[in-house]
Image (cartoon, rainbow, N blue to C red; front, top):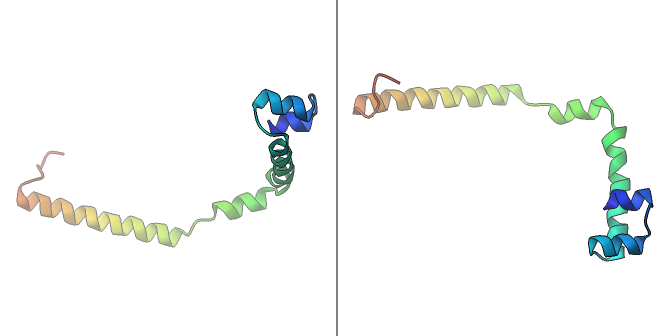
Length: 87
Protein backbone atom coordinates (compact mmCIF):
# COMPACT_ATOMS: atom_id res chain seq x y z
CA UNK A 1 0.00 0.00 0.00
CA UNK A 2 2.84 2.39 0.84
CA UNK A 3 4.51 1.50 -2.45
CA UNK A 4 1.32 2.32 -4.30
CA UNK A 5 1.25 5.68 -2.52
CA UNK A 6 4.86 6.37 -3.52
CA UNK A 7 4.17 5.45 -7.14
CA UNK A 8 1.29 7.98 -7.12
CA UNK A 9 -0.60 6.13 -9.81
CA UNK A 10 -3.80 6.72 -7.79
CA UNK A 11 -4.90 9.46 -5.47
CA UNK A 12 -4.72 9.09 -1.73
CA UNK A 13 -8.52 8.92 -1.57
CA UNK A 14 -8.61 6.14 -4.16
CA UNK A 15 -6.00 4.12 -2.28
CA UNK A 16 -7.85 4.62 1.00
CA UNK A 17 -11.05 3.34 -0.54
CA UNK A 18 -9.30 0.48 -2.32
CA UNK A 19 -7.49 -0.79 0.79
CA UNK A 20 -10.23 0.26 3.25
CA UNK A 21 -7.97 2.36 5.47
CA UNK A 22 -7.91 6.01 6.47
CA UNK A 23 -5.92 8.30 4.14
CA UNK A 24 -3.85 9.54 7.08
CA UNK A 25 -2.68 5.97 7.79
CA UNK A 26 -1.48 5.63 4.20
CA UNK A 27 0.46 8.87 4.60
CA UNK A 28 2.10 7.59 7.79
CA UNK A 29 3.07 4.28 6.17
CA UNK A 30 4.43 6.09 3.12
CA UNK A 31 6.63 8.28 5.33
CA UNK A 32 7.87 5.25 7.28
CA UNK A 33 8.76 3.45 4.06
CA UNK A 34 10.63 6.45 2.71
CA UNK A 35 12.61 6.84 5.94
CA UNK A 36 13.41 3.13 6.27
CA UNK A 37 14.22 2.41 2.63
CA UNK A 38 17.44 4.42 2.79
CA UNK A 39 18.71 2.20 5.59
CA UNK A 40 18.13 -0.93 3.54
CA UNK A 41 20.16 0.21 0.56
CA UNK A 42 22.49 2.88 1.88
CA UNK A 43 24.32 1.15 4.68
CA UNK A 44 26.72 -1.02 2.73
CA UNK A 45 28.39 -4.27 3.79
CA UNK A 46 29.94 -2.83 6.97
CA UNK A 47 26.58 -2.82 8.74
CA UNK A 48 25.80 -6.35 7.54
CA UNK A 49 29.08 -7.64 8.97
CA UNK A 50 28.48 -5.88 12.27
CA UNK A 51 24.97 -7.34 12.48
CA UNK A 52 26.33 -10.84 11.90
CA UNK A 53 29.18 -10.56 14.38
CA UNK A 54 28.91 -13.46 16.78
CA UNK A 55 30.82 -14.17 19.95
CA UNK A 56 32.50 -17.45 18.98
CA UNK A 57 33.89 -18.04 22.48
CA UNK A 58 30.37 -17.92 23.86
CA UNK A 59 29.11 -20.34 21.22
CA UNK A 60 31.98 -22.76 21.78
CA UNK A 61 31.37 -22.65 25.52
CA UNK A 62 27.68 -23.44 24.97
CA UNK A 63 28.55 -26.34 22.64
CA UNK A 64 30.93 -27.74 25.28
CA UNK A 65 28.29 -27.38 27.98
CA UNK A 66 25.66 -29.16 25.92
CA UNK A 67 28.10 -31.93 25.00
CA UNK A 68 28.91 -32.54 28.66
CA UNK A 69 25.21 -32.63 29.55
CA UNK A 70 24.50 -35.08 26.74
CA UNK A 71 27.38 -37.36 27.77
CA UNK A 72 26.31 -37.26 31.42
CA UNK A 73 22.69 -38.05 30.61
CA UNK A 74 23.68 -40.79 28.21
CA UNK A 75 25.79 -42.51 30.89
CA UNK A 76 23.14 -41.99 33.59
CA UNK A 77 20.34 -43.38 31.42
CA UNK A 78 22.47 -46.34 30.37
CA UNK A 79 23.19 -47.20 34.00
CA UNK A 80 19.51 -46.91 34.83
CA UNK A 81 18.67 -49.25 31.96
CA UNK A 82 16.56 -46.65 30.20
CA UNK A 83 18.89 -46.18 27.25
CA UNK A 84 19.64 -49.12 25.00
CA UNK A 85 23.13 -49.70 23.68
CA UNK A 86 21.73 -49.59 20.16
CA UNK A 87 20.94 -46.01 19.18
